[in-house]
Length: 238
Image (cartoon, rainbow, N blue to C red; front, side, top):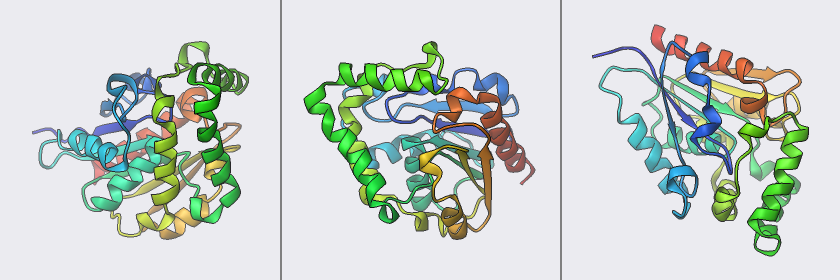
């Protein structure tokens, strides 16, 4: 048996496990297990649903032997899925890290329309053309060309964000017993409700990454890794 923490990592929309490249070296205190969500990476072509996404996390968390602490961390869409997992399994984690996933859709109809409207454009504009546009924006925000995703994940983007809008709520975290790290870039539009989310957490730990956008895991790896290390070390101490 090992008490070395297992760190399960869940990527954001359009990305896949490659989003977490380099993090194994930045968080050496844990064994990292990145997973692909439905319709992304190794699971390209599979339909998206919250149940299917949570089942993937259940399988990953289940790889830890009894007594081994598990920290679950997700970015953007992956953060919302991680919150959904924690809502269903409130006592199973030693730490939960939500990165760019602290905007409650029920509180922001304009932001909700922006995301659903973007997803609605996809059938008309086409995934490849939309991918080129989105990647050009990400490059301007500081994302390396090597980190830019292809168009694969766009096939499930409408269903994925429809699920977030319909299901994600700050009060999902009310019964989660582990420390919850609420992380957002200083300019992250999906960090708008950090304080609201914190009020619903039993043990909230708010971390804002200076000069970062929603793409902090890609543009500010060391700062994001610092939070992950904090969560891992706290989990090991527990």
